[in-house]
Length: 267
Image 1 (cartoon, rainbow, N blue to C red):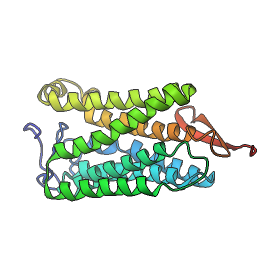
Image 2: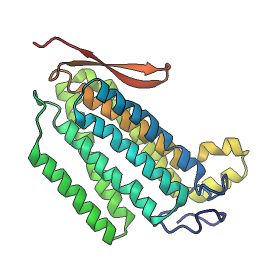
Image 3: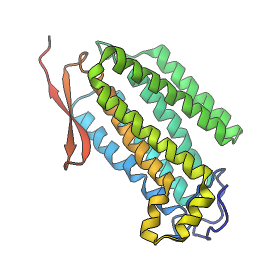
Image 4: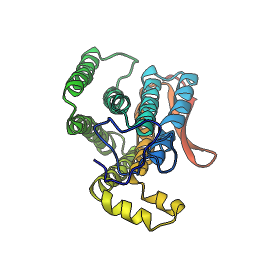
């Protein structure tokens, strides 16, 4: 539970099982955690662009679904941090499980020559996400969700490390960048939770525009959003030798990484 010092706002008292370190309704009467809310734009806009791009380039639908799952996480997190209502919390946390299951499927199927469907793996992941959903709806324990989510992330890390060490060493840069950015976000997430009282005290002594940099949960959104986006690019790159596409990372407006796909001749 967050320390005292929060204000009253449009959505009333929080009903969620979690209330983060950002002071409630300080910036806006209509948004409980302003910076934690708007930082979700990185989860929403770039993945929508990626999904459109994947559809336009005729890539496998699983990658378009992966992009849209990231967008769903961002929209759910936006609603959660804006309202701090339990129902909105579920819209944030459960899509995290579903999106990771899609990531696991994509990365597990990266060495298939044809656009096939692995029904046993698909069934296993659906059963996992369904089981987590049922348990979490009845046992409102955030640690349970965090462990189940962490398990999926660990699988993705192990699979990614295997790919860059033994299959595609030339993907180390992209793979390690994605992992490092995600872990940095996870580190800041823990700092925000553990040192919340000290962070709030520091914010009171800083000018408003400067104190924003201490909103580490918002930074968690930014870094994990970018890390998840880069992971999808990494997953797409791992299909290079097995599809008739040659992906190439370029930067939109010189800032944001996007994947350009070039058709290659069939061997």
